[in-house]
Amino acid sequence: MNLQAQSDPQCPETIETYSHSESNQEHAINLLLGNDAEVQKKESALFLLHLKEGKGLSQSAVNEVVIASQKLFKHTMGRVKAGVKDCLSKNGLLSSDIVGLDNIFENVHDPFTGLTSTFLQEKYYREELKCIVSM
Image (cartoon, rainbow, N blue to C red; front, side):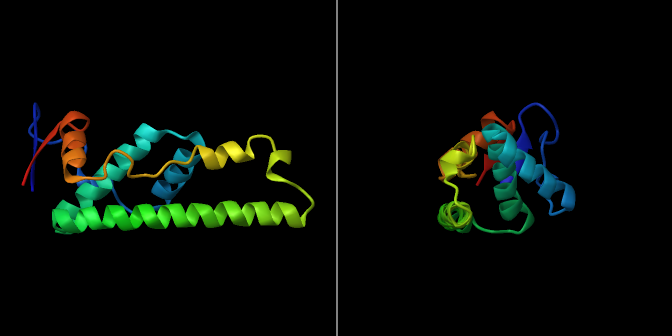
């Protein structure tokens, strides 16, 4: 896959944008708390580009990562929610006793929503990142 900007010599966002650092972890927490789905989608798209371009994974492998990550996300969120409810119960509380707690779980979205296929990924790269993706 080659990336080319539609109007600039380089894409406005690059795969180097995605890295593992403390500031990115703090940013991820802020995304979850702020429920900014579009920013999260952009971060996810850059992660997928990093896997493909930076790590050399095939598109098929990237798609498998998306599917497996979605399953892991769903399972993990279910465990977190159950753990919080169990902790509250042991302390004589219900989740409804804490204003907004249920909304937190409702508002955390799958990070790969809208990026679940090769077509959707390429469309996002082209329309939102202004990159032309060629296979």
